Image (cartoon, rainbow, N blue to C red; front, side, top):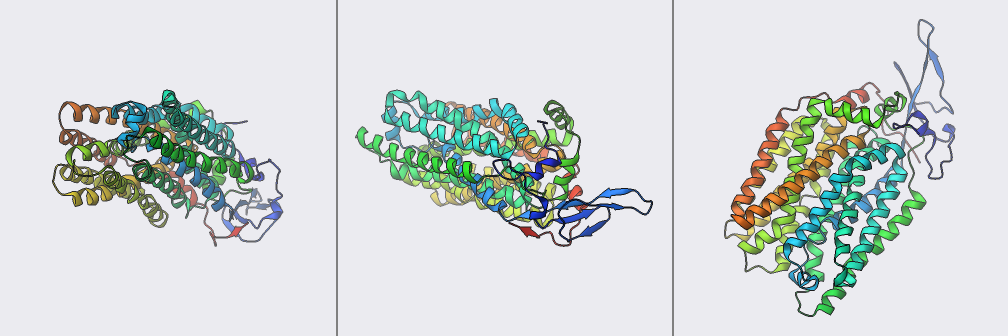
Length: 491
Protein backbone atom coordinates (compact mmCIF):
# COMPACT_ATOMS: atom_id res chain seq x y z
CA UNK A 1 0.00 0.00 0.00
CA UNK A 2 1.35 3.42 -0.84
CA UNK A 3 1.84 6.00 1.84
CA UNK A 4 -0.52 8.44 0.17
CA UNK A 5 -3.92 7.29 -0.94
CA UNK A 6 -4.46 7.35 -4.69
CA UNK A 7 -7.61 8.12 -6.59
CA UNK A 8 -8.77 4.51 -6.31
CA UNK A 9 -9.58 5.09 -2.64
CA UNK A 10 -12.79 6.77 -3.69
CA UNK A 11 -14.08 3.64 -5.36
CA UNK A 12 -14.31 2.01 -1.92
CA UNK A 13 -16.41 3.36 0.89
CA UNK A 14 -17.73 0.49 2.93
CA UNK A 15 -15.90 -1.04 5.83
CA UNK A 16 -15.65 -4.45 4.20
CA UNK A 17 -13.92 -2.98 1.18
CA UNK A 18 -16.66 -3.69 -1.32
CA UNK A 19 -16.48 -1.34 -4.28
CA UNK A 20 -19.47 0.73 -5.16
CA UNK A 21 -20.38 1.50 -8.72
CA UNK A 22 -20.08 5.16 -9.52
CA UNK A 23 -23.50 4.93 -11.07
CA UNK A 24 -25.02 4.53 -7.61
CA UNK A 25 -24.28 8.16 -6.84
CA UNK A 26 -25.16 11.46 -8.41
CA UNK A 27 -21.74 12.99 -8.83
CA UNK A 28 -20.89 16.51 -9.72
CA UNK A 29 -18.68 16.36 -12.79
CA UNK A 30 -15.94 18.89 -13.31
CA UNK A 31 -13.40 19.25 -16.06
CA UNK A 32 -10.52 21.58 -16.86
CA UNK A 33 -12.67 24.48 -17.90
CA UNK A 34 -16.17 23.00 -17.87
CA UNK A 35 -18.69 22.12 -15.20
CA UNK A 36 -21.58 19.69 -15.34
CA UNK A 37 -24.15 18.56 -12.84
CA UNK A 38 -25.26 15.69 -15.01
CA UNK A 39 -25.10 12.27 -13.37
CA UNK A 40 -22.99 9.68 -15.14
CA UNK A 41 -22.02 6.14 -14.32
CA UNK A 42 -18.35 6.44 -15.15
CA UNK A 43 -15.74 9.05 -15.97
CA UNK A 44 -15.95 10.36 -19.48
CA UNK A 45 -13.39 12.05 -21.63
CA UNK A 46 -13.63 15.33 -23.55
CA UNK A 47 -11.50 16.91 -26.21
CA UNK A 48 -10.02 20.35 -26.14
CA UNK A 49 -10.11 22.63 -29.14
CA UNK A 50 -6.81 21.16 -30.29
CA UNK A 51 -8.25 17.65 -30.11
CA UNK A 52 -6.52 16.48 -26.91
CA UNK A 53 -8.52 14.43 -24.42
CA UNK A 54 -9.08 15.39 -20.80
CA UNK A 55 -10.82 13.42 -18.04
CA UNK A 56 -13.75 14.93 -16.24
CA UNK A 57 -13.31 15.41 -12.56
CA UNK A 58 -16.04 14.28 -10.21
CA UNK A 59 -16.73 15.43 -6.67
CA UNK A 60 -19.65 14.55 -4.41
CA UNK A 61 -20.90 15.12 -0.89
CA UNK A 62 -22.57 12.25 0.99
CA UNK A 63 -25.04 12.68 3.85
CA UNK A 64 -23.46 9.89 5.83
CA UNK A 65 -20.41 12.09 6.38
CA UNK A 66 -22.22 13.39 9.47
CA UNK A 67 -22.50 9.86 10.86
CA UNK A 68 -18.75 9.37 10.38
CA UNK A 69 -18.10 12.65 12.18
CA UNK A 70 -20.48 11.69 15.01
CA UNK A 71 -18.60 8.44 15.65
CA UNK A 72 -15.27 10.26 15.81
CA UNK A 73 -16.73 12.95 18.07
CA UNK A 74 -18.00 10.29 20.48
CA UNK A 75 -14.59 8.85 21.30
CA UNK A 76 -12.97 12.30 21.13
CA UNK A 77 -15.39 13.24 23.91
CA UNK A 78 -14.37 10.19 25.95
CA UNK A 79 -10.67 10.89 25.41
CA UNK A 80 -11.18 14.47 26.55
CA UNK A 81 -12.56 13.12 29.82
CA UNK A 82 -9.62 10.72 30.13
CA UNK A 83 -7.19 13.59 29.65
CA UNK A 84 -8.08 15.29 32.94
CA UNK A 85 -9.86 12.48 34.79
CA UNK A 86 -7.20 12.44 37.54
CA UNK A 87 -6.54 16.19 37.65
CA UNK A 88 -9.90 16.98 39.26
CA UNK A 89 -10.17 14.05 41.70
CA UNK A 90 -10.79 15.34 45.25
CA UNK A 91 -8.32 14.96 48.09
CA UNK A 92 -10.17 11.85 49.27
CA UNK A 93 -8.90 10.10 46.13
CA UNK A 94 -5.37 11.10 47.10
CA UNK A 95 -5.97 9.53 50.49
CA UNK A 96 -7.36 6.39 48.87
CA UNK A 97 -4.29 5.92 46.68
CA UNK A 98 -2.00 7.25 49.43
CA UNK A 99 -0.21 9.61 47.05
CA UNK A 100 0.42 13.37 46.82
CA UNK A 101 -1.12 15.88 44.43
CA UNK A 102 2.17 15.93 42.52
CA UNK A 103 1.67 12.27 41.66
CA UNK A 104 -1.64 13.12 39.98
CA UNK A 105 0.27 15.80 38.04
CA UNK A 106 2.59 13.04 36.87
CA UNK A 107 -0.40 11.07 35.56
CA UNK A 108 -1.38 14.05 33.42
CA UNK A 109 2.24 14.43 32.31
CA UNK A 110 2.28 10.77 31.24
CA UNK A 111 -0.65 11.57 28.94
CA UNK A 112 1.36 14.23 27.13
CA UNK A 113 4.60 12.25 27.26
CA UNK A 114 2.93 9.37 25.44
CA UNK A 115 1.64 11.85 22.86
CA UNK A 116 5.10 13.29 22.28
CA UNK A 117 6.84 9.89 22.06
CA UNK A 118 4.32 8.14 19.84
CA UNK A 119 3.29 11.07 17.63
CA UNK A 120 5.52 10.24 14.66
CA UNK A 121 4.78 6.47 14.50
CA UNK A 122 1.05 7.08 15.05
CA UNK A 123 0.89 9.64 12.26
CA UNK A 124 2.71 7.16 10.04
CA UNK A 125 0.03 4.59 10.88
CA UNK A 126 -2.73 7.07 9.97
CA UNK A 127 -1.10 7.90 6.65
CA UNK A 128 -0.33 4.28 5.87
CA UNK A 129 -3.62 2.59 6.72
CA UNK A 130 -6.37 5.17 6.25
CA UNK A 131 -9.32 6.33 8.31
CA UNK A 132 -11.17 3.16 9.31
CA UNK A 133 -8.19 1.24 10.79
CA UNK A 134 -7.12 4.42 12.58
CA UNK A 135 -10.56 5.12 14.04
CA UNK A 136 -10.89 1.51 15.18
CA UNK A 137 -7.43 1.56 16.77
CA UNK A 138 -8.22 4.84 18.52
CA UNK A 139 -11.51 3.61 19.96
CA UNK A 140 -9.83 0.41 21.18
CA UNK A 141 -7.09 2.43 22.88
CA UNK A 142 -9.70 4.57 24.66
CA UNK A 143 -11.45 1.39 25.82
CA UNK A 144 -8.18 -0.14 27.01
CA UNK A 145 -7.34 3.00 28.96
CA UNK A 146 -10.75 2.96 30.64
CA UNK A 147 -10.39 -0.71 31.63
CA UNK A 148 -6.97 -0.03 33.18
CA UNK A 149 -8.40 2.94 35.11
CA UNK A 150 -11.18 0.70 36.48
CA UNK A 151 -8.61 -1.88 37.60
CA UNK A 152 -6.55 0.83 39.31
CA UNK A 153 -9.63 2.10 41.15
CA UNK A 154 -10.66 -1.40 42.24
CA UNK A 155 -7.44 -1.98 44.17
CA UNK A 156 -5.29 0.85 45.50
CA UNK A 157 -2.26 -1.44 45.24
CA UNK A 158 -2.70 -1.37 41.44
CA UNK A 159 -2.26 2.40 41.21
CA UNK A 160 0.58 1.90 38.72
CA UNK A 161 -2.08 0.83 36.22
CA UNK A 162 -3.42 4.38 36.33
CA UNK A 163 -0.12 5.57 34.87
CA UNK A 164 -0.30 2.98 32.11
CA UNK A 165 -3.91 4.00 31.44
CA UNK A 166 -2.92 7.64 30.98
CA UNK A 167 -0.10 6.66 28.63
CA UNK A 168 -2.54 4.61 26.54
CA UNK A 169 -5.01 7.51 26.53
CA UNK A 170 -2.22 9.82 25.38
CA UNK A 171 -1.51 7.58 22.38
CA UNK A 172 -5.23 7.63 21.57
CA UNK A 173 -5.14 11.42 21.56
CA UNK A 174 -2.45 11.36 18.86
CA UNK A 175 -4.87 9.53 16.61
CA UNK A 176 -7.78 11.80 17.48
CA UNK A 177 -5.96 15.03 16.72
CA UNK A 178 -4.42 13.55 13.58
CA UNK A 179 -7.87 12.38 12.47
CA UNK A 180 -9.63 15.72 12.87
CA UNK A 181 -8.38 17.41 9.71
CA UNK A 182 -8.08 14.15 7.75
CA UNK A 183 -11.67 13.16 8.42
CA UNK A 184 -12.87 16.65 7.54
CA UNK A 185 -10.91 16.74 4.27
CA UNK A 186 -11.86 13.17 3.28
CA UNK A 187 -15.62 13.52 3.81
CA UNK A 188 -16.50 17.24 3.77
CA UNK A 189 -16.59 19.91 1.09
CA UNK A 190 -14.49 23.08 1.05
CA UNK A 191 -17.27 25.16 2.65
CA UNK A 192 -17.56 22.69 5.56
CA UNK A 193 -14.06 21.42 6.24
CA UNK A 194 -13.12 23.96 8.94
CA UNK A 195 -16.48 23.51 10.65
CA UNK A 196 -16.09 19.71 10.65
CA UNK A 197 -12.63 19.99 12.19
CA UNK A 198 -13.89 22.39 14.84
CA UNK A 199 -16.82 20.13 15.77
CA UNK A 200 -14.44 17.30 16.66
CA UNK A 201 -12.25 19.68 18.70
CA UNK A 202 -15.44 20.97 20.33
CA UNK A 203 -16.34 17.50 21.62
CA UNK A 204 -12.81 16.83 22.84
CA UNK A 205 -12.85 20.07 24.83
CA UNK A 206 -16.35 19.34 26.15
CA UNK A 207 -15.05 16.03 27.48
CA UNK A 208 -12.17 17.77 29.23
CA UNK A 209 -14.61 20.18 30.81
CA UNK A 210 -16.82 17.37 32.06
CA UNK A 211 -13.76 15.72 33.64
CA UNK A 212 -13.30 18.81 35.82
CA UNK A 213 -16.96 18.91 36.90
CA UNK A 214 -18.07 15.33 37.56
CA UNK A 215 -15.35 13.89 39.90
CA UNK A 216 -15.79 16.48 42.68
CA UNK A 217 -19.56 15.95 42.55
CA UNK A 218 -19.58 12.15 42.30
CA UNK A 219 -16.66 11.35 44.61
CA UNK A 220 -17.23 12.69 48.13
CA UNK A 221 -14.75 14.22 50.54
CA UNK A 222 -14.89 11.28 52.94
CA UNK A 223 -12.61 9.36 55.22
CA UNK A 224 -14.55 6.19 54.39
CA UNK A 225 -12.29 4.68 51.75
CA UNK A 226 -14.85 2.05 50.81
CA UNK A 227 -17.26 4.79 49.69
CA UNK A 228 -14.52 6.61 47.77
CA UNK A 229 -13.59 3.37 45.99
CA UNK A 230 -17.22 2.68 45.10
CA UNK A 231 -17.74 6.13 43.59
CA UNK A 232 -14.50 5.99 41.65
CA UNK A 233 -15.53 2.64 40.20
CA UNK A 234 -18.85 4.17 39.13
CA UNK A 235 -17.05 7.09 37.45
CA UNK A 236 -14.52 4.99 35.57
CA UNK A 237 -17.08 2.24 34.92
CA UNK A 238 -19.43 4.63 33.11
CA UNK A 239 -16.54 5.78 30.90
CA UNK A 240 -15.61 2.17 30.12
CA UNK A 241 -19.19 1.14 29.30
CA UNK A 242 -19.76 4.03 26.93
CA UNK A 243 -16.41 3.42 25.24
CA UNK A 244 -17.29 -0.25 24.67
CA UNK A 245 -20.49 0.77 22.88
CA UNK A 246 -18.50 3.19 20.71
CA UNK A 247 -16.08 0.43 19.69
CA UNK A 248 -19.00 -1.73 18.54
CA UNK A 249 -20.55 1.13 16.56
CA UNK A 250 -17.23 1.87 14.86
CA UNK A 251 -16.83 -1.80 13.90
CA UNK A 252 -20.28 -1.89 12.32
CA UNK A 253 -20.75 1.52 10.72
CA UNK A 254 -17.53 3.45 10.12
CA UNK A 255 -16.39 3.69 6.49
CA UNK A 256 -12.88 4.41 5.28
CA UNK A 257 -13.83 7.02 2.68
CA UNK A 258 -16.69 8.09 0.40
CA UNK A 259 -17.01 6.68 -3.14
CA UNK A 260 -16.06 10.07 -4.62
CA UNK A 261 -13.89 12.92 -3.29
CA UNK A 262 -15.81 15.81 -1.68
CA UNK A 263 -13.63 18.63 -3.02
CA UNK A 264 -11.25 19.62 -5.75
CA UNK A 265 -8.28 19.60 -3.39
CA UNK A 266 -8.99 16.00 -2.43
CA UNK A 267 -9.30 15.05 -6.08
CA UNK A 268 -5.96 16.69 -6.80
CA UNK A 269 -4.32 14.95 -3.82
CA UNK A 270 -5.64 11.56 -4.89
CA UNK A 271 -4.13 11.88 -8.36
CA UNK A 272 -0.65 12.99 -7.31
CA UNK A 273 2.35 10.70 -7.27
CA UNK A 274 2.74 9.08 -3.82
CA UNK A 275 5.71 10.12 -1.69
CA UNK A 276 7.29 8.33 1.25
CA UNK A 277 6.47 9.31 4.80
CA UNK A 278 10.08 10.34 5.37
CA UNK A 279 10.09 12.64 2.36
CA UNK A 280 6.74 14.06 3.47
CA UNK A 281 8.17 14.99 6.88
CA UNK A 282 11.27 16.52 5.31
CA UNK A 283 9.16 18.61 2.97
CA UNK A 284 7.02 19.90 5.82
CA UNK A 285 9.90 20.80 8.08
CA UNK A 286 11.64 22.65 5.25
CA UNK A 287 8.57 24.85 4.99
CA UNK A 288 9.65 27.84 7.05
CA UNK A 289 6.15 29.11 7.78
CA UNK A 290 4.98 25.68 8.88
CA UNK A 291 8.02 25.29 11.14
CA UNK A 292 7.14 28.59 12.82
CA UNK A 293 3.55 27.36 13.22
CA UNK A 294 4.79 24.17 14.89
CA UNK A 295 6.52 26.26 17.58
CA UNK A 296 3.79 28.89 18.02
CA UNK A 297 1.05 26.25 18.18
CA UNK A 298 3.09 24.27 20.69
CA UNK A 299 3.49 27.29 22.96
CA UNK A 300 -0.26 27.95 22.92
CA UNK A 301 -1.30 24.32 23.41
CA UNK A 302 1.26 23.91 26.18
CA UNK A 303 -0.08 26.98 27.98
CA UNK A 304 -3.64 25.73 27.69
CA UNK A 305 -2.87 22.33 29.15
CA UNK A 306 -0.59 23.70 31.85
CA UNK A 307 -3.36 25.99 33.06
CA UNK A 308 -5.94 23.19 32.83
CA UNK A 309 -3.74 20.99 34.99
CA UNK A 310 -2.78 23.57 37.62
CA UNK A 311 -5.87 25.76 37.93
CA UNK A 312 -7.30 23.62 40.73
CA UNK A 313 -4.25 23.76 43.08
CA UNK A 314 -3.78 27.47 42.31
CA UNK A 315 -7.33 28.38 43.27
CA UNK A 316 -7.26 26.04 46.28
CA UNK A 317 -4.21 27.83 47.65
CA UNK A 318 -5.32 31.42 47.03
CA UNK A 319 -9.04 30.92 47.73
CA UNK A 320 -8.95 28.49 50.65
CA UNK A 321 -12.54 29.30 51.65
CA UNK A 322 -13.89 27.63 48.49
CA UNK A 323 -14.94 23.97 48.50
CA UNK A 324 -13.51 21.37 46.11
CA UNK A 325 -16.86 21.30 44.31
CA UNK A 326 -16.83 25.05 43.67
CA UNK A 327 -13.19 25.02 42.63
CA UNK A 328 -13.91 22.21 40.18
CA UNK A 329 -16.77 24.23 38.69
CA UNK A 330 -14.58 27.32 38.32
CA UNK A 331 -11.82 25.29 36.68
CA UNK A 332 -14.35 23.68 34.35
CA UNK A 333 -15.50 27.13 33.24
CA UNK A 334 -12.29 27.52 31.26
CA UNK A 335 -13.02 24.38 29.28
CA UNK A 336 -16.82 24.43 29.07
CA UNK A 337 -17.10 28.08 28.04
CA UNK A 338 -14.24 27.41 25.66
CA UNK A 339 -15.98 24.54 23.86
CA UNK A 340 -17.97 26.80 21.48
CA UNK A 341 -14.74 28.58 20.50
CA UNK A 342 -13.56 26.05 17.89
CA UNK A 343 -17.06 25.84 16.41
CA UNK A 344 -17.51 29.62 16.13
CA UNK A 345 -14.08 30.12 14.59
CA UNK A 346 -14.50 27.08 12.31
CA UNK A 347 -17.71 28.48 10.85
CA UNK A 348 -16.00 31.86 10.47
CA UNK A 349 -13.10 30.30 8.55
CA UNK A 350 -15.47 28.45 6.20
CA UNK A 351 -17.25 31.73 5.48
CA UNK A 352 -14.32 34.15 5.30
CA UNK A 353 -11.20 32.01 4.65
CA UNK A 354 -9.14 34.58 6.62
CA UNK A 355 -6.82 32.04 8.21
CA UNK A 356 -3.80 34.11 9.19
CA UNK A 357 -5.76 37.13 10.40
CA UNK A 358 -8.04 34.93 12.48
CA UNK A 359 -5.14 33.05 14.08
CA UNK A 360 -3.38 36.30 14.99
CA UNK A 361 -6.53 37.68 16.60
CA UNK A 362 -7.19 34.47 18.56
CA UNK A 363 -3.59 34.32 19.77
CA UNK A 364 -3.62 37.96 20.87
CA UNK A 365 -6.76 37.33 22.91
CA UNK A 366 -5.11 34.27 24.47
CA UNK A 367 -2.22 36.44 25.64
CA UNK A 368 -4.58 39.04 27.10
CA UNK A 369 -6.58 36.28 28.76
CA UNK A 370 -3.50 34.81 30.46
CA UNK A 371 -2.55 38.24 31.78
CA UNK A 372 -6.06 38.85 33.12
CA UNK A 373 -6.18 35.44 34.81
CA UNK A 374 -2.81 36.15 36.43
CA UNK A 375 -4.34 39.24 37.99
CA UNK A 376 -7.63 37.51 38.89
CA UNK A 377 -6.08 34.63 40.82
CA UNK A 378 -4.17 37.16 42.95
CA UNK A 379 -7.32 39.14 43.73
CA UNK A 380 -9.98 38.50 46.37
CA UNK A 381 -12.80 38.49 43.83
CA UNK A 382 -14.13 35.03 43.03
CA UNK A 383 -16.27 36.39 40.20
CA UNK A 384 -13.14 37.50 38.35
CA UNK A 385 -12.02 33.88 38.12
CA UNK A 386 -15.26 32.84 36.43
CA UNK A 387 -15.07 35.68 33.91
CA UNK A 388 -11.38 35.54 33.02
CA UNK A 389 -11.22 31.74 32.79
CA UNK A 390 -14.30 31.66 30.56
CA UNK A 391 -12.84 34.18 28.13
CA UNK A 392 -9.39 32.60 28.20
CA UNK A 393 -10.79 29.13 27.53
CA UNK A 394 -12.85 30.39 24.61
CA UNK A 395 -9.87 31.73 22.69
CA UNK A 396 -7.38 29.03 23.70
CA UNK A 397 -9.80 26.36 22.45
CA UNK A 398 -10.59 28.31 19.30
CA UNK A 399 -6.94 28.61 18.37
CA UNK A 400 -6.59 24.82 18.37
CA UNK A 401 -8.93 24.33 15.41
CA UNK A 402 -7.61 27.42 13.61
CA UNK A 403 -4.03 26.15 13.96
CA UNK A 404 -4.97 22.74 12.56
CA UNK A 405 -6.58 24.34 9.51
CA UNK A 406 -3.58 26.58 8.85
CA UNK A 407 -1.27 23.56 9.11
CA UNK A 408 -3.32 21.74 6.46
CA UNK A 409 -3.32 24.82 4.21
CA UNK A 410 0.42 25.49 4.46
CA UNK A 411 1.45 21.88 3.80
CA UNK A 412 -1.07 20.88 1.09
CA UNK A 413 -0.97 18.43 -0.73
CA UNK A 414 0.70 16.55 2.15
CA UNK A 415 -1.74 14.46 4.23
CA UNK A 416 -3.67 16.56 6.73
CA UNK A 417 -3.12 13.96 9.44
CA UNK A 418 0.65 14.37 9.21
CA UNK A 419 0.47 18.14 9.59
CA UNK A 420 -1.91 17.88 12.56
CA UNK A 421 0.21 15.19 14.18
CA UNK A 422 3.34 17.34 13.99
CA UNK A 423 1.81 20.46 15.52
CA UNK A 424 0.15 18.47 18.29
CA UNK A 425 3.34 16.56 19.07
CA UNK A 426 4.98 19.95 19.48
CA UNK A 427 2.07 20.92 21.73
CA UNK A 428 2.58 17.81 23.86
CA UNK A 429 6.29 18.59 24.32
CA UNK A 430 5.54 22.17 25.32
CA UNK A 431 2.77 20.96 27.63
CA UNK A 432 5.27 18.75 29.45
CA UNK A 433 7.71 21.63 29.76
CA UNK A 434 5.20 24.28 30.80
CA UNK A 435 3.42 22.07 33.35
CA UNK A 436 6.75 21.13 34.95
CA UNK A 437 8.05 24.70 34.97
CA UNK A 438 4.80 26.16 36.32
CA UNK A 439 4.66 23.56 39.11
CA UNK A 440 8.33 24.22 39.97
CA UNK A 441 7.77 27.98 40.13
CA UNK A 442 4.59 27.51 42.21
CA UNK A 443 6.43 25.37 44.75
CA UNK A 444 9.66 27.37 44.88
CA UNK A 445 8.42 30.92 44.29
CA UNK A 446 4.78 31.94 43.84
CA UNK A 447 1.61 31.39 41.82
CA UNK A 448 1.99 34.91 40.44
CA UNK A 449 5.37 34.12 38.90
CA UNK A 450 4.18 30.80 37.51
CA UNK A 451 1.30 32.50 35.72
CA UNK A 452 3.60 35.28 34.53
CA UNK A 453 5.73 32.56 32.94
CA UNK A 454 2.83 31.10 30.95
CA UNK A 455 1.73 34.60 29.89
CA UNK A 456 5.20 35.26 28.49
CA UNK A 457 5.02 31.96 26.59
CA UNK A 458 1.77 33.00 24.88
CA UNK A 459 3.20 36.44 24.10
CA UNK A 460 6.19 34.80 22.41
CA UNK A 461 3.83 32.56 20.45
CA UNK A 462 1.80 35.57 19.33
CA UNK A 463 4.92 37.30 18.01
CA UNK A 464 5.86 34.17 16.07
CA UNK A 465 2.32 33.90 14.67
CA UNK A 466 2.59 37.40 13.19
CA UNK A 467 5.56 36.22 11.11
CA UNK A 468 3.62 33.43 9.33
CA UNK A 469 2.90 34.50 5.76
CA UNK A 470 2.69 31.27 3.78
CA UNK A 471 0.26 30.51 0.96
CA UNK A 472 -3.07 28.86 1.73
CA UNK A 473 -2.47 26.12 -0.85
CA UNK A 474 -5.50 23.93 -0.21
CA UNK A 475 -7.85 26.89 -0.51
CA UNK A 476 -6.26 27.85 -3.81
CA UNK A 477 -6.67 24.31 -5.11
CA UNK A 478 -10.36 24.31 -4.24
CA UNK A 479 -10.82 27.65 -5.98
CA UNK A 480 -9.65 26.00 -9.18
CA UNK A 481 -12.61 23.61 -8.90
CA UNK A 482 -15.71 25.82 -8.96
CA UNK A 483 -19.11 24.18 -8.52
CA UNK A 484 -22.56 25.27 -9.52
CA UNK A 485 -24.04 23.55 -6.47
CA UNK A 486 -21.49 22.75 -3.76
CA UNK A 487 -24.20 21.28 -1.56
CA UNK A 488 -25.20 18.52 -3.98
CA UNK A 489 -25.53 15.42 -1.82
CA UNK A 490 -26.21 11.73 -2.01
CA UNK A 491 -26.74 9.19 0.74
